Image (cartoon, rainbow, N blue to C red; front, side, top):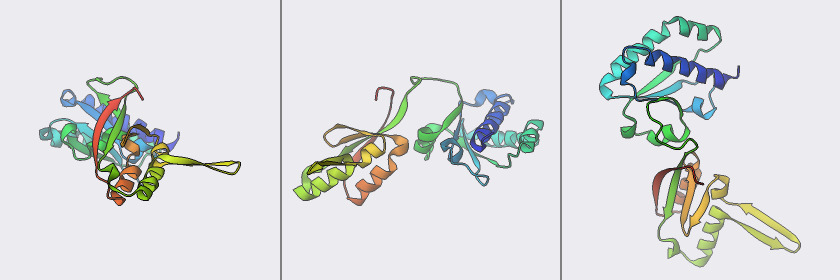
Length: 208
């Protein structure tokens, strides 16, 4: 079995173990995130799991992890070559500082509610400010980097893709960009380098 699939299976085994425990009813969501969720795990990677519950239950959840590590289920996975350790983050997801990362690339192992459309995706809506404050040459260079360009030289047509297209995003208005949240970093880095002011909004949608 491919490493990443094995690690997801191992994480799911812990999820089931936790939900079957005496505190299972206190758990709202269990989300796999980090390198394993992104498909980038190595033999040295931890398996990052977020448990959405009240902070006061943290010690109880950690105690269940210790029991899982001693369980027959865990021993069976060890025999399959899984040596990675589970690293838990515990608390209320809506208050967590890494919520964007967890939501944008995470895999939900358990959730009490399914409030979103099945194919909904997490997007960053980026609204640029003070677009026309630069001279024309600077603006042209800026927009070309963001949106790309097509240029005809003689009989040849040269096409250069911009950061938005490369990030699987799209232009939805003047100075307004929609991009999958997990792909936003390169665009934001460029805007910051250019000292461009912007606002960013988080949205879920299945309509793009």
